[in-house]
Image 1 (tube, one colour):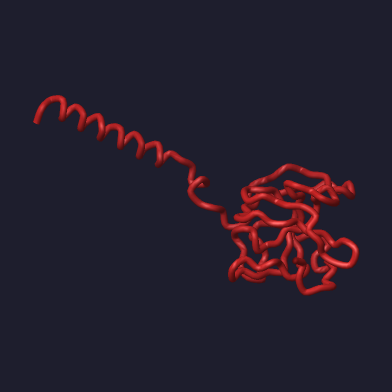
Image 2 (cartoon, rainbow, N blue to C red):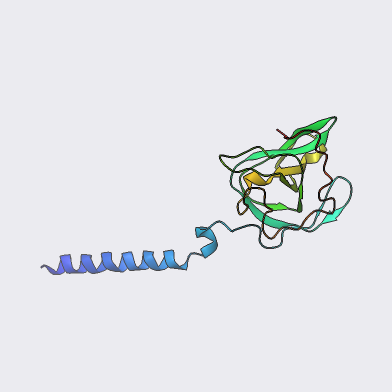
Amino acid sequence: MSVKVRVAGRLLTAGVLATFGLMMATPARAAAVPDGCWGTGPTVVDPQGQRWPTRYCHNYITGDVYNYVGNGWQPIGKMYAGDNWFVCQAHGPENPPVQSWKNDIWLYTQGDEGWANNGWGAFPATHVSGGVNYGPIPNLDWCPWEDSLPKTSTRAW
């Protein structure tokens, strides 16, 4: 084996080991989606002037933010997929289903886009990581109005 081949082989091995070391140093958070909410988000003020603490949660798909308008639930904004802050959660009408996921819990937040109420409303739990069918999103507080959202129809969508 020539010296050039041995040196090239050692350099290749060193490069592979260095790359592997960098991959091992990557934070675990980048490798896995959290189960429920985590951390402390910003303190926010809603359109009614109420100040709220928030937590981060991962919504794995983009979806509409709803609010009760007129005689029913209407989309009033949109939230993009990613790590977003949420205020709290409460029961309401049936969520739009996502594959086999079903729920009647909604998360209070402000959408990335707002068409009414400055985008403030309810985001379906079926779009957020960490929940189970008809169960709450872990590590997110219940809203003070829990179980008092209007349920004039069995679904919001």
